Image 1 (cartoon, one colour):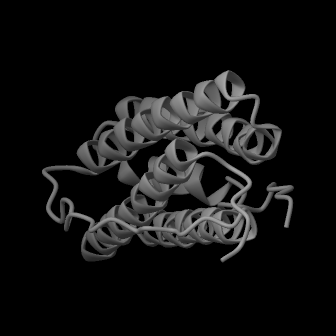
Image 2 (cartoon, one colour):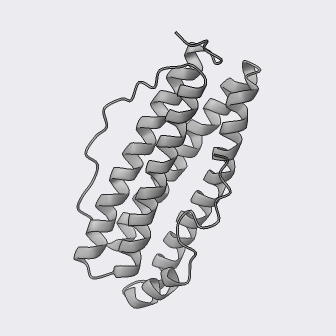
Length: 173
């Protein structure tokens, strides 16, 4: 058995976060499918990329747990929401999801600081920085969608000008 370099409580919290990241990935796949059905290809591509990025976050956490000598206990995830009344509703769900993930990451950072767990703190600082970008982008999309109203081509044009999800990531390996 490997030496465990993080507390059991941190390992449990990070394992739960793995589930949250996979849940976000699945939800973003469903949002992308909705945008495809609505003939909004730029939004579909964006959320397909977001799904891939969230999956990458889950894998990063699993690798960290393994390196730290902990077992990644991945929880079951829910199916999520597949139908939306409007693009705005889908974008608002994404914003809510990112806000919730931010709260959870902050709670894990609080635990790392409380436990003087510098290894987890280093990993979590990357996630804190990532969440700032994720929430800011999701919030901007909601604002633009509200401004666009029924002019979905305006929203599509805006999304086309955004960097691809993960394009500006400087993730530590």
